[in-house]
Length: 367
Image (cartoon, rainbow, N blue to C red; front, side, top):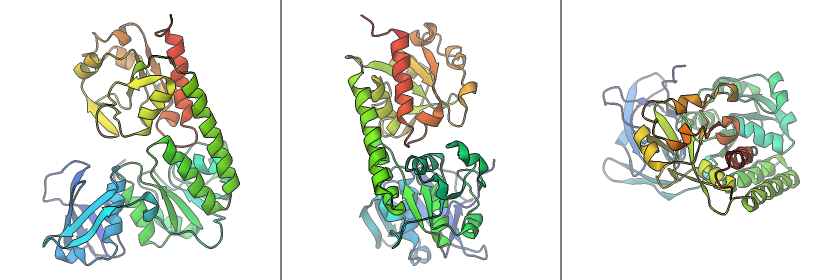
């Protein structure tokens, strides 16, 4: 599917990538800001370390919010926004709670969820009966099959969301691209609570935050306690010496979690150590020779958007450049359902349980 041209917006502006500048990385982008009529009226350059806008763009009062959303979707929670003359527009750390709307006077009775993990979180609060619609990739709980769908996770129909008039939208800034959704909801005046969990602790806090917005704080505490107990049980059953683990999020090019993601924590709970956990970032690109040098004892393939039945360990075993990988030669490559490993939500600990079972099955720590 072609990505929407719009990258983020305010009530005044719509931002698109600058066609006159060579495309940058997801962490360094240049934008043209257009008016409602499509006229180009401003420019911006956003990087994790610095965000610069021209004088026209700087007058938009909603610009700091949009820039913070862009940063949060890339795991950065500190803004350094100024105009071309050096005038500071926004500076310093911020929290994910700053990007949504303040709680209403009464609990939300109707909801829209815009990420699979958000739908699962609402279900864990036993409040899924309040959900009016969700985006296309949501597949749990089973009753989601009867709900209207709003389009893909990075491009849902926000005008349709507005027509539904939910009390609250549960949106996300977990990955780059989601800033178009959060800023689009704000531009339409749709109330939202924004989540961007990057650890188990973040998921527990999200349960409490959303539980408070729904008026089900007791259910939230019960869900938190259940996850904490599951995590503690995993910790107690780990082998004395961690197993070196390679977790693959995508095969070509090869991507694996770095140190700044919940997946690194899931590997540790399973009794392993992420062989690329010393690298900064949530997702890191690697080459086959780097994996051979890392020498993992177990490998897991858990490709984004690929259902479990289609995960093929032979893809890694037979991949060019990996003939010298001992774990592949020994057949210690396992499929891992990305519905658990790839979604930071109430079901994420199932990924750790499955990795722990594979560690026991492999026998690499026996004796």
